[in-house]
Length: 267
Image 1 (cartoon, rainbow, N blue to C red):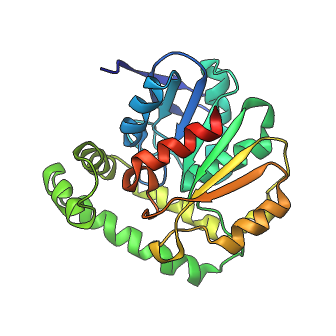
Image 2 (image 1 turned 30 degrees about the vertical axis):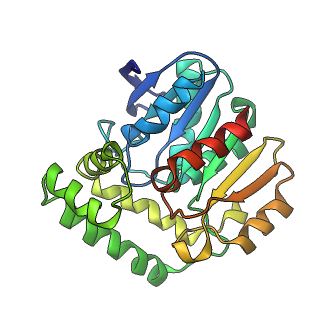
């Protein structure tokens, strides 16, 4: 059985993060998506520990048990990841980021390529074109409505609700999804202002191997094939693959295929 430690790490910015860690071996850093948390990765943590890695999974600022903040922009959370790597003495970890955590991971690689060895982006929330305030509001409102609904529900009710949407998820994944929804700052939705900024505004070609995992067009993912091809043309070390029969949360929809893709890339 995996033994997991939990600690608080205060960054130079003054933000204190709740951090989970397990295993021994080469370092892997897991960065969750918006309204997620570190334990959202518990299944993958156990799998990666069994594969011989030391795995670190923080609650991002405003998520889980970490400090709330006034700034949730990608630049701020990428800075948190860089500071955490240095604070914990992680040795050029493989960084795996989902959705918002994918944007965070990509910006980390662009701004601090010396701190990471490889990056896996799971349907990263990055944008090929910029939106306007109406575009952002249209996408923020469903999230806000969902959060308001979820915060009136118990953990058990949330598990039942999500099981109705995703009956194929494991019990552990469902419990972790529900816990995360009850433990985040509603202001984290400020991050959706990033829809105003296309990735090309900050993407810098770096010699860090980067691998994108994304889903088929009919599964509601963020990343589309034409965008992937544009990213490949821009980033010399970027590769990509589609994970079949998965939606945006690939690691819960297809955990075995997700793990296989990750291990094939990072070994």
